[in-house]
Image (cartoon, rainbow, N blue to C red; front, side, top):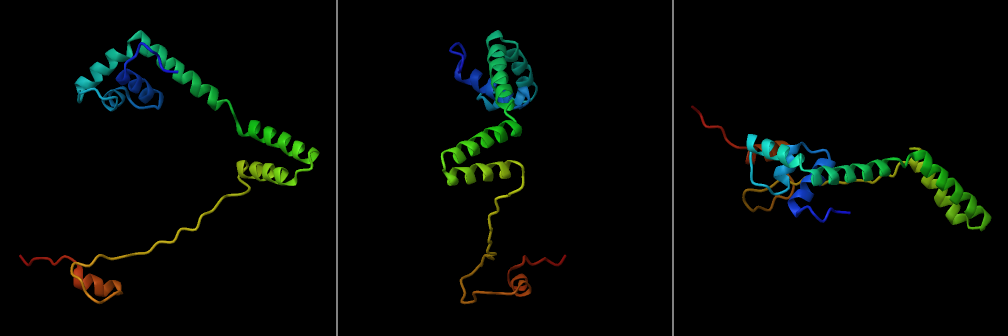
Amino acid sequence: MPNDKLNIRQERFCLGLAEGLPQSRAYVDAGYAARGNAAEVAAARLFRNVQVQSRIAELQAGAARRSEITVDDLIAELDSMRKLAIACKNPAAGVSAIMGKAKLLGLIVDKAEVATTLRKPFREPCDIERLSLEEWTAKFAPRRLAS
């Protein structure tokens, strides 16, 4: 929950620091107009602000709470959901819980097929649809000037 006493740029500065940005980078990204050494000095001054310190502590505490959830916790929850699915005679939910556990443990990896098409640009319109790499290079590669 954002601190009401901070302005928008101060809040963005706090969020940048909570994401792990250096002070000067967070200062500039927040919208302050300073570069180089001036940004470092101004960021250090802003960092010493009590309200800014309080907001950064809030953001870091929230991140710490989120990181307390581990794969083991998720597996335990999925296992209890699987048992509930068996008790309710809902096999689809049980299978879903088992698949979730398998994905978290790295036993199943979702794969996506990626197909790419290599298209070479033409400098001039022509009827030729396909050229070999050598033909394309001979026709369109930059020419070196003789010196």
